[in-house]
Image (cartoon, rainbow, N blue to C red):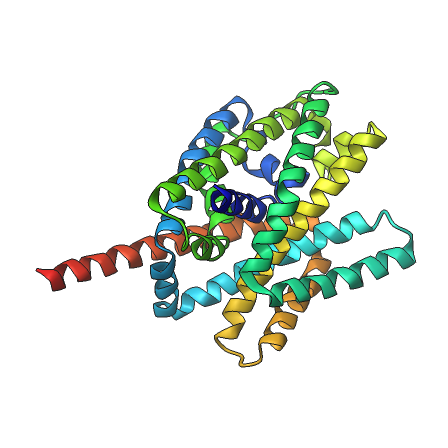
Length: 331
C-alpha cells in the first residue's frame, strides 16, 4: 500500500501546480462555464483515470514510442518550457510579497534547489511529494471549505457553457501529456491491481479539489480575474491567506520539479553532460517566466492543451501499432 500512495501523491503533485492551486487554471477551463462546469469536471475524472492507468501500465513501451517519434520530443520540450515558466512565474509572484532583498535571495535559493532535486531524479521526486502532498492536500481542503462560507458574489458568465465540452479534454491533455513520462516510470514496480488502485485514488483526490475549488470560484465571482483567485479570496483572513500561500508555493514547487525532470530527460538525449542539461532545464523556463503568470496561463496554456492532445494521440497510436505488430509476428 505504501508504494500505491507514493504513486498517488506523485501524480497529484505533478497536476497541482500554480495554475491548479491558485485557481486560475480551474477558472479558465471549468468555472466560467457555469453549472455545466460540474458535468465537465466529472467527464475529466473519467479521462484522468483512463490515462493514469494507461501510463502506469505501459511505462517502458511509451518511452519506446518517444524514442521512435523524434519530433515528439520537440513538442514535449516546448510544452515543458511553458509549464515550467508558469511555475516559476507563480513562485516569483508569491515571492513579490517579500522585501526586495529577500525576494532576490529566495529566487536564487529556488533555482539552486530545483537544479539539485532535478539531478537526483525520480526517486527524490517521489519522496518530496510523499512528504509534502498529504499535508498540502489537507491544508488546501481546509482553506477551500473556509472560503465556501466567505462567498460574496456569484460569477457572471461571458462564455457559452457548451464551449466547456472542448475545454474539458484540453484540460486533461494539458495536465497529463507532460506528467505522463513521470507517471510511466513510477508504475514499473506496481502490480496490475495496485495500478488500478493508484489510478482510482489519484483521480478521486483530483476530483475532490476540482469540485470544491470550482464551487468556491463560482461563489466568489469578483475574484476570478485576479492573478491568483484563491489567494485573493483567502486574503480576507490572514490565517487562510498564509495557508493558501503555503499551498500554492508547494504546488508550484512540486510541479516545477517534475517538469524540470521531464525537460532534463529530453535534453539528455542531445547533451552528454547531465549537469549542464539540468541547468538548462531550469534556467531557460526561468527566463521565459518574465512574461508573467496570468499571461502564460490564460494565453499559452490553451495552445499547449492542443499540442498535449497530439502527444496523447501519438502515444496511444504508437502503443496500439506496436501491439498489432507483435500479434502479427505471433500469428
